[in-house]
Image (cartoon, rainbow, N blue to C red):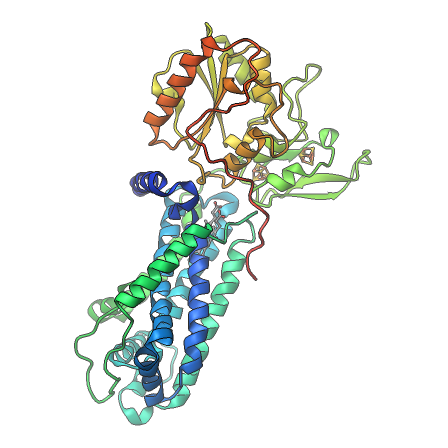
Amino acid sequence: MEFIKQPMKLVFLWAEGWFDRFFGPKWNPFYCLGALGYYYFWIVGISGIYIYIFFDTGVPQAYESTEYITHDQWYLAGIMRSIHRYASDAMVVMVLMHFCREFAFDRYRGGRWFSWVTGVSTLWLVFSAGITGYWLVWDKLAQYIAIASMEWLDWLPIFGEPIARNFMAPTHFDGRFFTLLVFMHIAIPLILLFIMWFHLQRINYAKVNPARGLAIGTLLMLLAISLLKPAVSHEMANLSEVPGELNLDWFYLWAYPMIEHLGPGFMWGFAGLGTVLLALIPWLPPKKRPPPAVVNLDNCNGCTRCVTDCPFRAVNMRARTDGGPFKEEAVVDPALCVSCGICVGACPTAMPFRRAGALVPGIDLPDFSVEQLRDQVNAVAQSLQGDDRIITFGCNHGCDPTRLGVKNLGFVALRCSGMLPPSFIDYTLSKGLADGVVITGCREGECHHRLGNVWVDGRMARERDPRLRRRVPEARVLKVWAAPTDRRNLLAEINAFQAGLPDLPDDDSSKRLVGIETDKMAAPEKTEPAA
Ligand code: HEM
Ligand code: SF4
Ligand code: SF4
């Protein structure tokens, strides 16, 4: 699947880079596609409630009341109808882009399968909600959709007699059907909302609200489109006539021409097989999961920092089981752990300075321990010489500094930048292992493990525990968030940083952190997804 994923990822990185330049990471819609999905859901809900006040069920009434909404009360209900339609379209776009992005960036394996599989189920619900909405208008388009949908359902051998027949003659069709449709059009979004909430149950601090500026900006865009091109109906449905030319909403109704031209059987195969294949993606092909983080009770003091920082709700606290002097201990749920190491970066006991005995922190990755990390730093330092030696700590998902051709630069690869305990920066500089330390990883707002670079920002700014010690000369520390496509930026930053290192005084105490990332993100507040 790499041959599909890699080009998709490059396209995303390229587009996101441009959006970053114009809007900044905070307002970059690519970094909050799921949150925008939520946002449009709420807009659809509120505008839907308003137009429902004027909507009347019944064969002519449904159409007539929609015409009243559109033309007689165009200044409010009409605009609400348009916003309802365009926000629904925007929601489809956001959900599909979110889905493609999670796929392209490989964010669905291991414990993340849960968000992926629940996400797949939202696709059916989003489309069903939109399609039932189109029926309610009861114009020629609704007639076409109703008959095509029934023919599609009739292909399955579950109904005794073909239900499409109900739409063949006006006498077969009454207002009760509209009551059922209204019920479905309300019930499906409610089920969707429940699944949207369920979708986030394995995620800590899920971003369910876009930045305020982005929210206001996109709402204004919806309003502008609604004024420029208000949503209108076709002629009223007439079951004794075949609908003529129709304007399809391609966001929702793309499947209907396929049913018509390729047949209902093909469409069932496409939808059914497609859903199964999509749901199985986290296991295609099956890969061995790295071992989950393990807690070492001898060194766990129950401080709860690992619980607070784990982006995947994989660590919890429970009553002490070893009779130790602390009330609680951390415990990892292996099913949820994606082995990102962020909890290790949060643990106050992950201190490289410890000399006696093995270096075992309260929580550690069995296949990439803090002790191994310290050994790597020591080993990398051996290969550097002079007064402009740099040790770079970077994650596997950002720009690879070893490919920049910078001399006198050693690299220590991490699972995530958030895996680095800040004491390692202090250790590297105070032990004279390097003249400067560079920390790099995924772009701001775009951490592969969701929150790694956000926590690093907080720790380095000394706003979040474990904090970078005050004695660390900050002019010797460079933090650059850079994606694989940001090589030029990273190279320029490192070159400028390295050139300045020989001129820094030994005991430099400047309080400046240098880097292309200037707008530090505050640690997000804990927000529970809407119930
Ligand atoms: C109504 C539709 C959807 C909404 C509103 C929605 C919303 C969200 C939100 C808010 C997040 C949390 C983002 C974060 O804070 O990191 C998220 C995560 C996720 N979503 Fe969706 N989503 C939807 C559909 C989908 C679909 C269709 C898929 C793919 C099949 C999907 C896959 C995922 C995955 C894998 C994550 C976890 C990402 C991670 O672990 O980093 N979602 N979604
Ligand atoms: S951060 Fe370390 S010491 Fe604190 S609870 Fe977690 S494992 Fe224990
Ligand atoms: S490695 Fe640590 S932070 Fe990462 S998912 Fe596992 S428990 Fe959570």
